[in-house]
Structure formats: C-alpha cells, structure tokens
Image 1 (tube, one colour):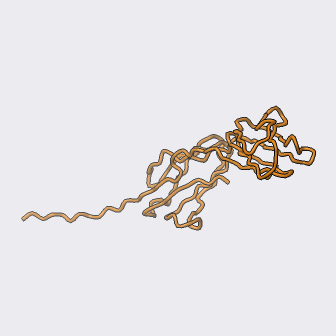
Image 2 (cartoon, rainbow, N blue to C red):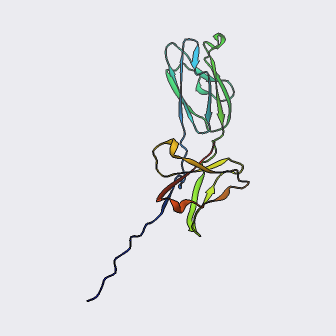
Image 3 (spheres, rainbow, N blue to C red):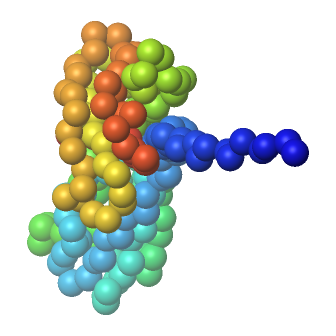
Length: 187
C-alpha cells in the first residue's frame, strides 16, 4: 500500500500596487454665469486645456476679450464656450456694461504635475521592492494599507523628495501581511 503525502497549504503573500498605471488628466469644464452687471465668478483660475462656458442669467450682454483673445466676441450672447490652450491672463468685459464694472478675468496656469507611477514590483531577499516614477523635487509619501476601508487605514512608510524622476522603495515588512496595498501621495 502506497502512502500519499498530505499536501501542505501554501500561504501566499500578495501585494497590490495602487496607482500602478498611468492616470490620465482630463480637461475640466468651468461655468461662469453673467447677468445684470456681473460675471460670477469674475476671477477664475483654470489649467491649460480647460473649457469655460459662460451662461446668460438675464439681460443683453457680451463676453468680449480685452487682450487679443476675442472669447465669445462683440455680439450679445446667451451662452458661449472657449477652450484655453495657452497659459496667461485673459481679461474680458461686457461691451454694454464694462463702465458699470461688468468685467472678468480667466487665469490659465500650466498643467498640474503628473501623479506618481509605481512600477517594476518584485520580491528581493524577502523585501517587496518597487520603483516610483515622479517629477524631480516632488514630495512623495509612500503609504500602505491592509484594506481599503477608509483614510484611517493608510500608514505612511516613507517620505521621499527625489532629485531625479525615479526612486526605489523597499518594504521590509511586506511579508508580515497577507495583503498589502500601496499608494504614493503627493501633497
């Protein structure tokens, strides 16, 4: 009679990388209402590539650029749209009511920095190691959690401000957990 060996259970340690894939930044749409002697908001800061939609809340008005950008033009409008592709300051006015203070400005700033990307995850000598791609001189806080139950579950493991666009992170405690999630926060 042949004896069969009983199989021993194998416990696998799993690590999942949060933000392990590129995150695409989508352009935003911003809204400005205008009416009797107002643009609301009258001072708007957006990112390059964002769109502004002006909507008339009452009366006859224009949304006319004052610095070379015609925006919606000199004709009276009920609504108009402009997408800002270049950075700069773009003042505008209502041609009929500028003397009453019906003016506004759109400030277009550059795109925000790209989020950190975690790549090349591997086990090395019992440590879980991965590479973080980030903007140079950007503060990166590597955090870990054992579940996604809320913000209180994330624990900061390391703060790094790399001189180049890449740094390595090594979690020497990863083998103590059945599941460990990682993310990089950029304040």
